[in-house]
Length: 95
Image (cartoon, rainbow, N blue to C red; front, side, top):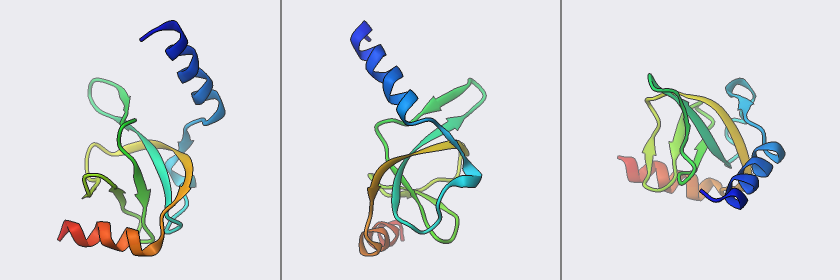
C-alpha cells in the first residue's frame, strides 16, 4: 500500500466511522460494510457488501449468502439502498 492509498483509506475511515451493531437500521435495504472479529483480530471485508434484513439477519450481496460466523462487530453505511425486490432475489438465491 502506498502512502497515498493509506492516506485515502484513513480519510475514508474518518468520514465513515464504524458504528455499533445495535444502531444498524433493519429492513431499510441500506448497503453496509461490516467489521468482523476472529481469534486473530479485527478485519474488514471491504470487497464484500452486506445488508440487514427486517428479520435481523445480515446477508452478503455477492455471492449471496447469509452471515453466520464470524459475527460482525461493527458496521458502516455505504449510503446506497437496495430495493425490496432485489433483497428478496438475493434471499431466494440462497434456497
